[in-house]
Image (tube, helix red, strand yellow):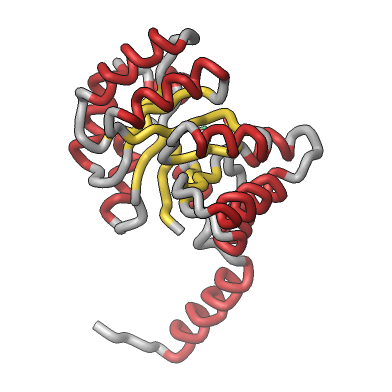
Length: 217
Ligand code: G3P
């Protein structure tokens, strides 16, 4: 499973990138706002650092305006994936932009039917939102499994990009289901390293090393 980082915080991306943990980046208008930076400037900086796809989201609502914005965003770098919302206009924009050879990430997906439409419209990625479904007491992981099954049934090449990931558990569950990509905030990716038994075991090793006077260098 590929790891995308869901942030526009360049330093946070760099830390994970230096560890080889970053296969791509996803941003959205809320993350750009949080960064406090200009979308073109920060997106270019991320694209210069990361080789894989960097999703940059349109803000228009009408297909023709989304297409114009998508073309502009795609000029930033070759690894831009234009992100469009899963609306009828977004699907039209997806069809046109993917037809031009651009990567398209269709976002705000909350149902298997929406994912089917995105695949038919030529999406490179479909972004089902797990956490926001969980917030409504609907199991978001079930949606990932449904989309995986449907895409496999028909050989759709659209990649399942699990989004709105809120916990380390979501990451391993997505990997078990077979999501192609999971995008998560830096804190969730770092939390994957944590285990209470690791901490407990390390405490014991440190105490014994001290008691035994072990010195290695
Ligand atoms: O990039 C979109 C998605 O990952 C947003 O997550 O936590 O705002 O639901 P969240």
